[in-house]
Length: 273
Image (cartoon, rainbow, N blue to C red; front, side):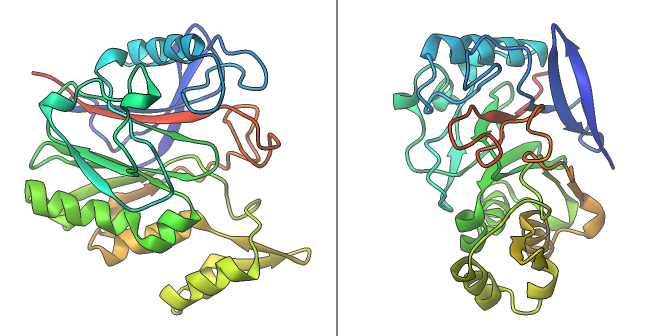
């Protein structure tokens, strides 16, 4: 397994995990190039909730999803609130949140589905994107894991929901941890550290480090440990190890961009046969 950045044409780029079989499931993490949004959302902003012109965001979504051979108008997107709720996307949900933020799945940070041709689309600017694929039951998932969602267990909740709804066996589930702020850049306070240490006392030394007097958190590792605890083998978990703050010329970063910026998208969809 590995993570690769690919050029899709017309200055559009995607990150993808090579372990996810392209003949069965298509996915991508969008970059910030190749869109039409103006500063400070330049240029491929995929978020409808950041005061960017809606028509620009919709054009960006159409461009990126078209490059993945997907239909933007069928995408399903949630109102992300740094929570742990998981929603099962059904056929009748097609298009919710695709073209208007008001239509998004309310107060939800993870989506799962077994409906082919429906792209799950979640937005990020430093928080951790998680994607899932159950080849045996032809089901997928995507989750948004900021520090609050990670502490709350959104990764484990998503795995549990796929078990309950689709019969997913965790030891056969593939998971990808996408581009997000890394342990090199994610500075947090004592109150955040205390919450992580309370939940994962045995892993705290792996999650926190002091760098030049600043307390840094490894959200990648926190989510990896949560997936391991949910029953996924280490070999089934791939991490992009790509820091959005370090690479903010390629990816949107809330911290590196000063707070007012666009959003990258994690997109995953089952192919139609």
